[in-house]
Length: 529
Image 1 (cartoon, one colour):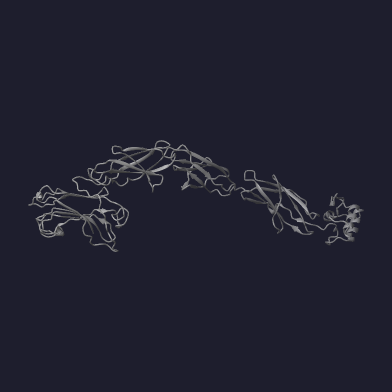
Image 2 (image 1 turned 30 degrees about the horizontal axis):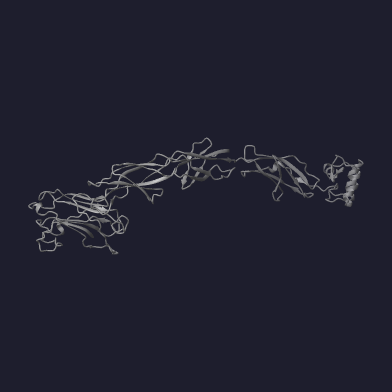
């Protein structure tokens, strides 16, 4: 418990010490103001109020304590706002005797930094049968013992300055209330407030307005008259948010220091802003096969952002999440095809600016066809071709051809037409060809195997069907050329080689002497194709 003040009646003719007020001495009634802390709680405004000596109980049983507290638990001596936080604080006590003995119209009050913490009425300082006029307050001193310190014990010293004994309230005014702010031009903000109340008739010399762009550092200030409840702060930056707090102050004629109230609750506003916010939208994957996409970007405005709305096509706009200078929004309403995206940022002054883009949703695969080709073929290379289209989608990105179990190889794509040269075909080997078209979004279509005939490669000139070309095949070709033997369909395909144009056979539908000569050239190694 820390005692700060003693106010009492003191009888200078009494030989007892002025400290002696627990016994039968006449140094009462007495008011003792201080703080008491128990355990991990907060500070109680511990007030001893001893009645006059006629009261039978003249010790602590004749005292009173309060249930008013300074701050919320846990509150320590060194916490911000507590007496030992290293800052100057105003402590003011008020006592009033009762008008007649036993009449409970006495009073005790306590203000901490201008705020009324304790107010107790109906006190009978002087009991019935005694005259208050004989026990007037005539003695006060600052200080007192410190007992019942908490653990861990710490030094609880305090300094006293600007001591005032007065018949009226002389502490700091209460902080102003209902502070509001409004931007009225590109460089000024209007403030309004009301006088605070602390149960005392206090005087005010003026109001001080603190302001800045950082709510934690209101380092600029102006002073206005005590009669004002409104002020305009000018010479501010355009489109910038400012934070404000207001105090009231009073300096008594005999005070060495100015009494300034605590700061009011803060208010903020933005100077009138004619400049729209900056808004960007980061690139979005497009085209895409996903109907749900998360859009994001940056947004900035000196005065603050009121909203960021994202509109997709004709759908109603939805609010984006804004964190610092970033925004994001997940959209789930993409429709097949192109989707226009408009992102609109609005600042606190109502200025707007938009960023736009397009997202293509493509979930439909392209269409691919394969033109008819001759099979089986006598050639070791065979060109194939077809059409690949993605009319309402993102466009064909590639056409891939796979022969048998081989790797996919890119076909040549020219507009909607594709072509590919099958090479290194082996005689007598059947190969399955699969053509796959892929659009820009990643959708794929494979030409069904049922629509493709296998390519069987036959041995050129092998009329006997023994998988080799020899003199017997040339003799058989001569018999067919003179009409002695009629070739079947497979023999016609293998033996109808002439004429040879540019090294490539150009079959003419019959086996004649030209074909005989080419087969002899194959046997002797002269002819190769």
